[in-house]
Image (cartoon, protein in one colour):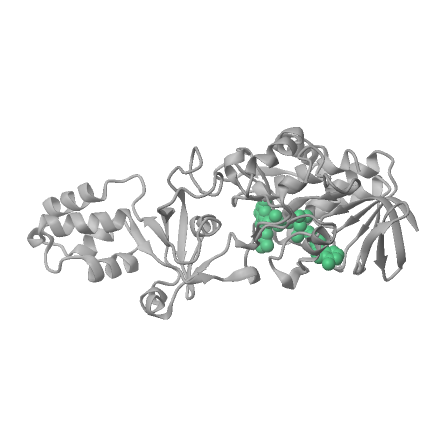
Length: 409
Ligand code: FDA
């Protein structure tokens, strides 16, 4: 059959591209190998879908050229998406750090997108694994279990490699390469970090302990522009002020997931266990006010008790605080401020929220997501070498890039 547009992948980006193209009167077919559309939307944000962030900006994105994302993000903004949610009557609220979540279940968002696709005349084939994709007389051909489909435009929106159990396949990267587009190295991101057995011996008893930290990566070189976390220019010091969580395998929690996108094998991560506080002053004050107390007791006033005990045993002077040499307390304060831990790896694509890397942005038109060398071929969403921080940034990229392709495909 012949279509104007075939969209591969019925996730956030693919559905949004299909809706926009369908609204323009294009005959659109969406093909997905999964039995249900928008599965990642359904499970996202703990079932409440953190669908965007009020603080969308280039700094919150990683990739060889994070600024590539700005064109689409500025043309279809977080406020544009919020307006669509409002029009659909889907209630939402701001949690922390500008993160917008649904009040109700995330399935509302999936249901709404499916309705919008139907209203725009989009045809959706689920449980329909596409096979060979090639150039055809009208543009492109896609083999499917329902026969070979032809289209003038092809939008590839098959997502990254994270959570293979939910249908992630790497299919889109192969299509890109087939059409001569470069794909940057991919790796799991927004993922818990794992540690060697010798570290796990002391970490395991701390499993379940959570605390606010400032997490960073200890790195000597400046790295490529845009490849580093920071609250300013590329090269600014790494820092995420969020919660960390000890687990049986290592470290998790939002601060760790954020920093995992920047961490590379062999590097240490840094944890400030008392962010915004002067650890040395706290310890000096404790010595003055509670001289008879043990260090663990004093630390437990500011840190979870199990962690306070561990730190005191491992790094602290023993005996009553009054007898602790000032130099030992200052050394401990330095550790509390800049605790360095060296992960051995991450939990991988099994639990990673996103995939870092992907279709090289140099090969795409930032305004439309069209491959510069292959007219009619578009790549959108997570498949592209644009990855956001935790906190709604990834969905906004999916909406914005899908929207951009949908205006022209
Ligand atoms: P997405 O992965 O959503 O969709 C790809 C589609 O392509 C799927 O329907 C898949 O079945 C299909 N597909 C794959 N291979 C195919 C093949 N070979 N043939 C046909 N179809 C194929 N982000 C955020 O901003 N806020 C949040 O709250 C969360 N929460 C969250 C939780 C969890 C557990 C995960 C794993 C991820 C998140 N994310 C998130 C990230 C977010 O889910 C992700 O960035 C977007 O879903 C990406 O949208 P895409 O449409 O690009 O891919």
